[in-house]
Length: 416
Image 1 (cartoon, one colour):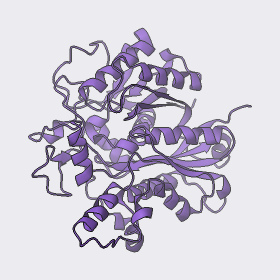
Image 2 (cartoon, one colour):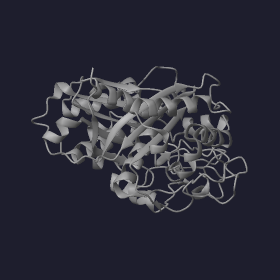
Image 3 (cartoon, rainbow, N blue to C red):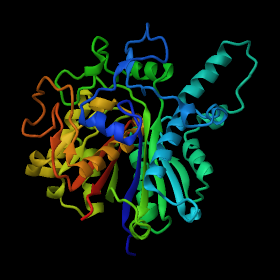
C-alpha cells in the first residue's frame, strides 16, 4: 500500500530554558543553561544538589485548580505543552473528525512524585492505609494522553509508550505510522516527565549516573567534554501535532516540516550501559535512514542523545562516524541536553522540536560548556561547540536512547 505523507503542524514546549516553544528556541540559540540548585526539596544530604527545573511555572495558570490537584506534575506538563501545540496548529476542533484524532504520548517514569509522596505518607502513619483516591490515576504513565483526549474529545488511538529515555521518540514513531497507514488524520504526540524528586534524584545518584558538579551547576551538563561526569536531570514536556499532508494542506495549515521516517533497535547488552561499539545505535540510525528513503550524505544535522556521560557520548559519536562515513564531518552535530538537561521520557520530543526549529530558522543550537577536548572523539566532527551556527538544514535527525538498551531515531525534512 502507498504510505501517506505526514507533516508537523503544531509545536508546544515546556522546558527548563523556556516555557513556550518560542522561549525554548530563544534559550537554545542563546546557549542558556537551565541548571541551578534544586528548589523542590532539601538537598543537604544528596550527592547532587542541582537539576534543570522549570522556572516561573504554575500549573494553575493553565489548568483549573481542582483539576490540577488530580494530576501529577508530569500530566500537568503534558496538558500545557499539548494545549500550546494544538493552539499553534490552529486545528478547527469543531470540524475535525475526532474519531480520527489520536493521542500517543511518551513517559519514562510517570507519576513518580505522586507515588513517592503517597508511600511516604503511609510510612509515617500508624499503618492504616489512608491513600488519596486519585493516587493510582495520578501515578499511571498512560494518564497524560488520557487527560488530553478527555479535554478535547479526541477518540482515536490513545496510549503511552514506555521505553525509558526513548519513550517520546517511540511515541512519535508510533504516531507517524498511525497516520502513514491511514488509521488517523491527526495525532497529538510527544512526552513529559517530572522526576526531579527525592526518589528520582536519590535513585539516579545511587547509580552514579548524575553529575556532581555542585560548585558550578550551570556548567555541569557538558556533552563531549573530556571532564564530563554524568547527566543533569531535567523536567518538562514537548508536544507535536502530526497531520496527514493532504489533510493539512486542505485546511491551509502552517507546515513546519515533513516527518519522513523513524527507526528502532535494541542494544541487547546491558541494563544501563551503552554497547561500547555502538552496535545498537548504528542499527537504529541505519533503520531510520532506510525507513525514510534517505541517503546518509543527505543529512545536515543530528541532535544526539548526548547525555554528558563518559561512555555514552563516545559510543554515539563512533556510531555516527560508522553510519555516515566521511560525510559525518559535514554534519552539524549537537546536544541540546547541554542546556536543558536530560528530560528522560520527554527528551525525544523536545529534541525533535529543536531540529524542526533549526530547519525553520536556519540555525543549529550549540553544545554549550565545552572546554576540554576528549582524545577519544574524532576532532573532525563538527559538534557545534559553545555557539549557535547558521546552517541551511534540509534534513535533520534526532537520536534518543534509554536504559534497557532501547534506541529510537526520528528524521524530519524541510518541505520543498
